[in-house]
Amino acid sequence: MNEIMKANLADVDAIIAARVDAFSNEVALYGIGPLDYDNRDVLLRLFETRNIYKIVENGVVIGGMTCVDIGNNTTYIGMVFVIKEYQNRGIGTKAMNFLFNDFPDIRLWKLTTPYLSYKNHHFYESLGFTKASETKPDNNGFYLFEYEKIVK
Image (cartoon, rainbow, N blue to C red; front, side):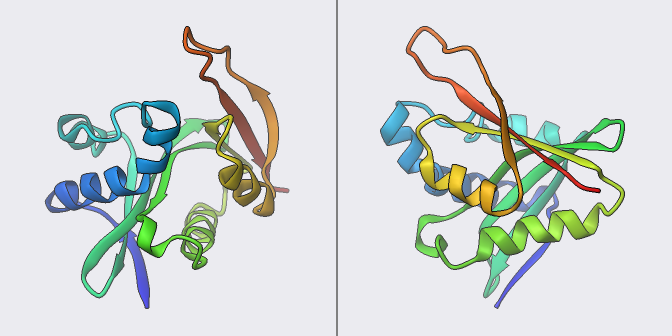
């Protein structure tokens, strides 16, 4: 049974390790992972401005997520991750529903995901997100899909 709870500074190394594992497929596919996903110092600073959660199973951090209020009842989900061993078990869905329940006043949820991450597209769409736009490709042709979920 896994638990979702606010992370604290003592969780930083475990969160970084989980991120590195969870995003290893994207790194293999694109040659890069999410911006600063493996940077300990950046994560430490994010505790000042972001809501950071951990997903724990038997005392071990197996995933997590970050989000930030961007105003006007809108929240941006910065990262959702589950280590590979625990993927495809409904943990991501449970984590997202936790966020939706933890922030009942939010009317617009936003996030981005890489253009070739088809499993992510399906996952977010299954939760009611729709593709709103795309970022401009960088010099390597990499770009993101921007998703939104409107809550009525």
